[in-house]
Amino acid sequence: MSDHIVEIVVFSILFLLVSGMGFVAAKWRAPKDMAHLDEWGLGGRSFGGWITWFLVGGDLYTAYTFVAVPALIFGAGAAGFFAVPYTIIVYPIFFLILIRLWSVSHRHGFVTPADFVRTRFGSPTLALLVAITGIVATMPYIALQLVGIEAVLKTMGVTGDSALARHAPIIVAFAILAAYTYQSGLRAPALIAFVKDTLIYIVIIVAVLYLPYKLGGWGTIFDDASAKFAASPAPGDGITLNTNNQLQYITLALGSALALFLYPHSITGVLASKSRNVIKRNMSALPAYSFLLGLIALLGYMAISAGVKPLPGAKAGSVDSNTVVPLLFDQQFPSWFAGVAFAAIGIGALVPAAIMSIAAANLFTRNIYKEYFRRDATPAQEATVSKIASLVVKVGAVAFIIFLDPQFSIDLQLIGGIIILQTAPSVGLGLFTRWFHRGGLMAGWVAGMGLGMWMLYSIPNAATGRKHFGGSAFPLSDFGFDTPRTIYVGFIAVLVNLVVAVIATLILRALKTPDGVDGTRLDDYFADEGDPRLENARTTPDAVGSST
Amino acid sequence: MTEPRSVPRSDRSPWNWLLIIPIAVPLLTPLYNMDSPRLWGFPAFYWLQFAFILIGVTTTSIVYQMTHRRAGSPSPAASTSPSEAGDE
Image (tube, rainbow over all chains, first blue to last red):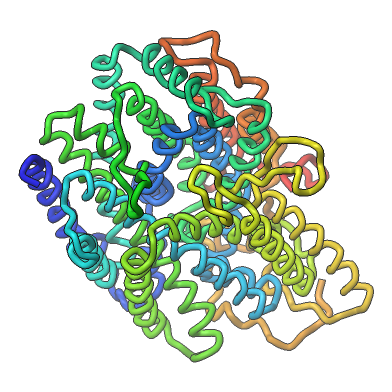
């Protein structure tokens, strides 16, 4: 531990500084009345261009991304670089689709994607499915932020022997996070994101200039990686793709991009901005983070070149590849700067974890509590319930990490991306068309979810010797095709979801099954800052009608 | 913008079609899945994908400039006839 004392001191100072900011954030751009879900859960829907850039950037590019993407590149090479095309294509998709969700939410006061689905399709049940999907997909994502912090703590040697001692620093960190999120709501991560992103940019710019200089230049780094993959027995690795994993690369990039815009925490970040123009301008500015992510990914190759050996994992004989980047910093940087880098990753975990817990809490409050327990809840009561729910969500995430193998969170995160994709027809297509029958969307959701789970269950992982949930690359040969190619599970699952939704809609229409009433008008999808809001928007009658 | 609107609003614009480029190009792996030519030591696979980020920035900036509503004036997008190409 004493070898790392400087790193630990720098890390702790920065961490405490940021925690202080989290508490002060409640007074930042303070509203007259914090006891309203729009204030606590969406920062007053008032964020301009700069705040939105830091907030959404800090939200989408999480600590886990910063640790896991280079780890993937370290292990498999080019296949891990999917994160770059993924974060390129996500912004045009945001530009075209989420902008409509912002408008309709602005008009109707929606806080969650499930609020939209409820009003659009007149179906609290479909909204409940969307809300539960969102909560279940978000929980392991929050737990994974802890995995990011843990990788850093492990490298600094802050680990004990017993389970409790090993996790004590994380419990303390999350308790602080929970306290200031409870008090300041979305304002806390918005303010902290400034520090987090500034630190990350500084660390990465220094790393990509200094490390190649130390390691003999970029050409050498790529050649070292290439030599490592040539010597390894694994068939899928290399610094370029091979014929068998290209389809997986493409479908994983596209599927992940579609999943990202459906995740409740991305939607929360977008809904907090004050106008359509703020969002549209940000779609041109946010790719700066994609550039950063691409450089971070390449840290995996630098780690190969520098001869980094990952620390042992939780189980005997396994390695924790997530420690690759922290170890690289630890070995190559002076200890004070390694401390700054570790703080960047640690704080980088807090921003998304706060936003995710707020998003999950909002889903619970609006689409479960208010829908099924207290229909006449006032905005102040909603804010209170959401604050408490955010605490529960965080305790749950910590419990995940302490009581379960971290691998379980990683598996769940893999599943999370696939299950959140199953809300694409209701939330994504629902913004453009009301053609689907609510029953059809439910049928599609069930089919996509079922198929996706079965496919994931059937994928083994040769490297870790596990029989199930070994990854998201599904061999097409399992469908009877004579090919060694693989495809992203989520992609197939959402296609089946869509086909079933279409067929079921046609059948339900033919049977003249009652459909819900659409509570939105076409003009709502183009509403902008300054347009009047509809008060008491949730007036859609539950009575079924023959709308559309 | 509180008075009743005579022209129905829309976000349809032929400019939106430009956004197909940054969605499609990064997904065409045969375009960039190779080692050479290298640029500053980066294999083509990597520097080309970094270059695609610039394509994304450029196209979203162009579409934003061509379609955003200026305060006080009607939207250029709204004046586009609904029968024209849209983004649906």
